[in-house]
Image 1 (cartoon, rainbow, N blue to C red):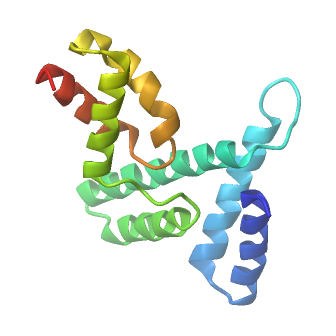
Image 2: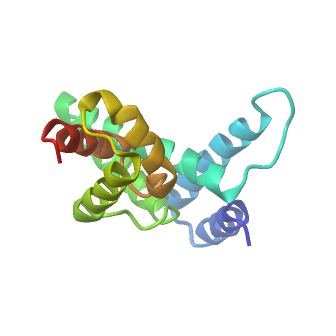
Length: 152
């Protein structure tokens, strides 16, 4: 079963259970997936990897919105964004810990032979397939920067 099919089945189950947060969040995710499918020259079905990219983008939006609502003093809206983020996280691969990301970075630096911050792009390109959907891009980027600035 594809990830998109799982989302559609879970939407039906959430609607039957009258779980408002889960059903509205999954509807929003499916809408984002559909928008991605029809963008571009011709409509197509997304692969699971592409669906994970959409989910990651939506999860990031929820984190940023929750922070913005917290800063604006809208605690109830921030809590709703976090609740939606929890639902989205159920469909994302297990997130890598900071130590796991650092180990992947060390491996990528060794593979690419990078030794200065100017070669950060090379390391990031090597890491992308290993961390896509499993780690926050901002975290990976800052850890790579720190590793290259420190000369390992």
